[in-house]
Length: 594
View (cartoon, helix red, strand yellow):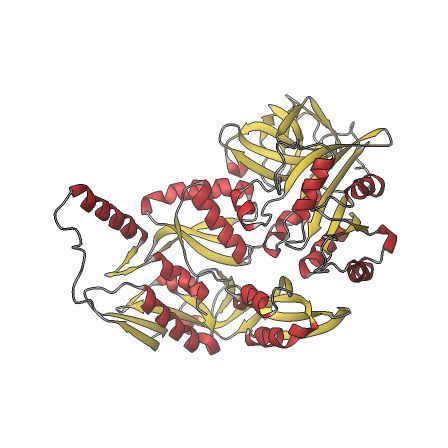
């Protein structure tokens, strides 16, 4: 079989999408007319931010020594928040291109994605990218790769996504060094779903890799975990556009359209098989995703609740790592408690809701899930501070800890130590990787890194430190629930769980910030931070003497209308809490307290 399935793994910003562009150009998959930078990143958001958010699969045809080969490339994201996308792509491949930036060297996410690939027995082709830059240090980076992989220097390819240097060598290495998939086209059908997208005209389209068997157009197929049966209206491979085929055999990556309407019927990691000749067992894919950060999403207008549900379901098809369940809040009405893999993921979901589905939402303070041990009864898992039992009923609370790995240059060790220890971290070990670079391992509470840790780490290390983490169990902790009161009324959307040592400082900063953000009213507003019945901080917003909205004298009524409409739009954004209007900015202010 002349098929090669491979993915590209790298740390964020190491140039994998640009290198993918060159591979597509060299194999003639994309014509010059269609060519644009980062052609696989098709979301506006990806282009704007220059990051890959979603894995993209595409098929290329390549000829070497007179033989035709079919190469299936899956481009993956590099940011730690999207590592679930990477795990799914790796499950569908036999080999991986490991791309390392020639001027930056190996960074944390490179290592964690690499281990994931090695666990799945992928063949690794190491590539040093950006070798055309003056700041590139290919010899040093080669040393690092040899240390990490234990490969020969001759196996490392030097390349540049910008100039196209080394692209032919890479294509040759893919054919020669990555094994062909080992499926049996005559066995019962087994295909692993690794992604799905929603198309408003054709329903849900599932992407899969056929492990065994053959899939033809018109076949009667069954999705194993949901037990639903469908006719395959169209099957085909993924070029720049979808390209239909009569049949696909084992080893191939393709798509299936069968008019599925409901998002619950397609699960990433599920197996497709024939109804008549089913396979004996499902493929063991990748594990369920564990959300790290929880936040409430509420529609600005209460009537949009059902629209928000539909939008989240459609978004979940494109992004299987998003989880959500309904919840309600006294201040904000009905909404959803959503689980995200990290703060960037949360930001991206909000952006996509507003761009793709035209849904404006209010987000509450992000938090993590805690285990609460009451004096009597079962252990409760709490995702939301308002779900916490009374303090007198609680025996103790455990919070999730992570094992964080930070790779940095030796010059920045001091400030990074200070930052991590200030976030209640404990140093587990530190060791030199090569030359001037070292890896530090910390155990830290997940709740401390949720809000602004990553940004601070980047700024104190001038962008050189890279960060990666995984969950590392729960530990008992002295946590208290901090409430914010406006004129004596508690605003549940601003409640947070925080460590007792930080509560005073956090409460005071929160009151100061809200004082800046809440507009002055015709009456005094008292902003208080409280732990239980004890008030720990207070600010007062003084009343306004006079309301100045009379800036239109006479003239045309349309000018007044315009101002009134503008005001109405602003009002809609605000949520009425008792008698005090809290602008949407206030709910987000908590994220940027420093």
